[in-house]
Amino acid sequence: MSKDASPMATCRHPNRRQAIARGAGLATLLTPLSALAQQVPAPQVASTAAVKNLVVATAKVRLRPAPAPETEVWAFDGVTPGPVLKVKQGETLRLSLQNRTDKPLSLHWHGVRGDHAMDGVGGFSQEPVPPGGQFEYRLTPPDSGTFLYRPMLIGGSSEPAGRGLSGMLIVEEQESPAVDLDLPALIGDWLLGDDQKLLPFAPDSQDGAAAGRLGSWLTVNGKPPPLPIKLPPGSRVRLRLANACNARIMRLRFDEMKAFVAAVDGQPTETFEPVRGQLPFAPGTRYDVIFDMPETAGAAASVTALIGPGVPLVRFASDGAAKPARPAIAGMPLNPALPAAVRLQDAKRSEMIIEGGARITPENKLDLAGIDLSKPWTVNGGQGDPKGKPLFSVKRGSPVVIGITNKTAFLQPFHVHGHSFRLLHPLDDGWEPYFLDTVQIPEGKRLHIAFIADNPGRWLISSTVLERFDRGLWSWFEVT
Image (tube, rainbow, N blue to C red):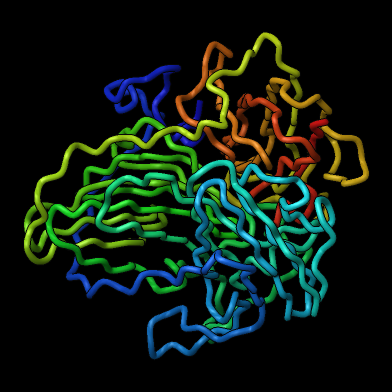
């Protein structure tokens, strides 16, 4: 199995030593750290006491440091990313999306196992919200955790996302772990010209048949990286990382910190250290990481995106009087609504074969000969079709195993809507010790996922590279 396929340790019931020792090929390097600026203000948090109006319209923001000019983007309530929405586990969030752009919109709640009518896929689970229109989302998430919201509509997701429409949803536990800072960090990717304007969105560009719309500039919470944080030595931090990029698949490296992963894709897991300090990070992926600040004043730590020579995303510096010693970092309670096991022997089995896209020549160039750029990818020989036959249909409560084969020249991240799943071992003799809703299938490889189909409705299995999704790289299944 490719080291990008499984970010964590492998065993059915791991202890911490096993989880650390059996991780799937994650490596680390150390980089020097420069002086850090003062801690930035906490992200805006939206109230959930009543209906929250979320207005989408054009705005101007400074993505690169001054004196670079501002960039015209699309924003939620004038900011990008959108406000961090917070709701308690089991409570209802009511959100009125008001579309003041010139394109249709809908918002997908990535990782939320909610009502299929609220899943937010325009043209599939709801009608798109037209320009000048509005739609009220009502979400009662059964699981606590870190989730993502971003545009998703059949054939039209890339542009609104690439213009800045994304944000984080935090469903708070009944009793959260004691930390000194709970920090959301949403990573965005922007394709900018020399004038700092967004480059045009071309529906049939070759990007959609290859890696997707890869940006020229990263931001963290909409600001130039690295995000600077100063805290007293020994402070405990919960860092919520989310990849909201259109297509940027990267790896994260944790430098000069003893970081413990406490949740993957919103679902708590037994804490473990990433082996050699790295985690794979595809669009849609989220991690909750807990660590203690260095105990020496002036010491620094960072989270770095392994792109080129490395892009520091968040830099932490110890400053001031030290905090009292804390107990060892412990895991969070598992979400009780998820099944502890899947009876594989009773499972409905289905297959997805991913083909198409550009070919890679021996000179490492794209070969697009004979490819229809409007339909470059296939799933089982065709494109996603809301009116077509489902991949499979099962009764509620049925166990499901899906084999996903990637016959393309590119890593393929896929997201299962409305469900959390297990990544199976190659011989179907067990599964990884964490839940996922987004999985990366390496080029030329085949993986199996398993879950209980416990959420009635019609659900997508979709590429999280939005340019590929817009060109039909998705399928759907039905739970009755």
